[in-house]
Image (cartoon, rainbow, N blue to C red; front, side, top):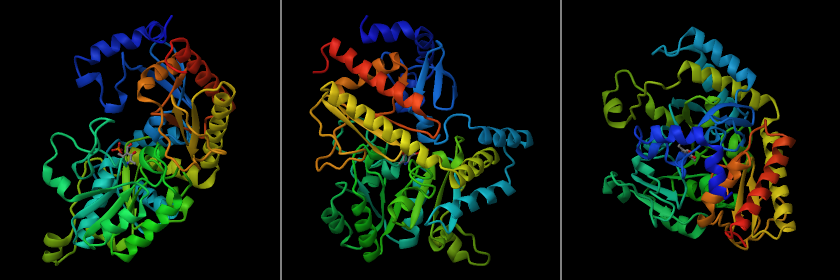
Amino acid sequence: MSILETYEALHRGSRALAARASTVFPSGVTHDARAFQPFPIYVERAAGPRKWDVDGNEYVDFIGGHGALLLGHNRREVMDAVKSALERGTHFGASHELEIEWGQQVIDMVPCAERVRFTSSGTEATMMALRLARAYTGRERVVKLEEHFHGWHDLVVGRLGPDDARPHSVGVPNGFYDALTIVPSGDVVALEQALAGRDVAAVILEPTGAHWGTHVLQASYLHELRRLTKETGTLMIMDEVITGFRMAPGGASQRYGVTPDLSSFAKIVAGGMPGGCVAGREEIINYLEMRENDADWNSEQRVSHQGTFNANPVSAAAGIAALKIIAEQDDCARADAASAAIVRGVNDLFARESVPGSAWAVSSMWHMNLGYDAPRPKDVEWDVEAQPEGIAPALMRSFRQALYNHGVDLMGNGGMVSSSHGEREVAHTILAVGASVADLRAEGLLG
Ligand SMILES: Cc1ncc(COP(=O)(O)O)c(C=O)c1O
């Protein structure tokens, strides 16, 4: 049977649900990245590093709740905290003690965090960070790096498709693009030029390079960016929605020794429940402050912020439990080690089988090149001059179908590893990649 025929035979229940979904949702999905051909898998339950679909197929999970689950699915301490919070109520529409503990935990862990404000998602967090930057500096222009993703709001809109020359979405007023400068990632000279006019409110970036390290960024660039932003009165916003509490208990900022003015968080911060926050320098975050008897400040300077589910008590309980584990135990390091073991295993396999491709990782996020003669890093991190290219678009669909057939759910060109991924998952993944490559070769898709 072909890769596609096997996929269809193994996933009859998912096919039936996808048919139903196609009459309810555009493209049958609720997130662009969940669309898949001929239809996506429908997941029934998950535990630790694994999940099971409605047809009973088991997968090593590399989506990890879109990166939210550094501790794996259903970590006991987090589940207990959620259960006990649920029993007390899902939403008070009022201040509550857990939100203080949650915010304090963020302050204790994150280098730039003097003050915090919770949001409901990463998109909301980057939106708030940019608004604060504009309010604080009195400047409008924002600089972002090519390909870097910061959510789907109008201020930093992503691309419609992978081949688009520029980021845009139909429905965003053209005026938004006028205040946005996009510079090539990693190019210090271009950044220097973009900031020279001293009219930029903030530079926002993914500290790993675009798409959690799919495009690699040298740590030295972060230091240069910090220097140039300071020199020009520009704020540095580190978007740690993915890297926060993953690359280290204090995120990429701690790992690279670069302290931004503001950081945006979501995913891990809320322990696998919905939630996000902006953390940073007190004098900037305090632009959210309401001042008694200062009408001018309140109407002309402060940034307003609402949000029904901000600091939701169930998310707070999950977030506190997860962050405490991350602060006190070695989960970040264990996830990094599993990710490194996958990269080494895949590179050994590709070398042994003369597969045109290679693997690399940034912390617990691993990636693959496939379908072209890619250089291999010496060890785990990408240390080659040329940028990696990822999985050739023509191979992506069949490769992922094959990996599903062999029990692996890939995210993009690799995966988010959790501290629950152990030797079994590493070994299974390397075998599955080998079997999927063999399937591609059998169909003449890969040399
Ligand atoms: C770096 C980065 N920033 C922001 C976001 C948006 O977060 P959310 O999906 O919670 O809105 C994402 C989502 O994946 C992200 O990867």
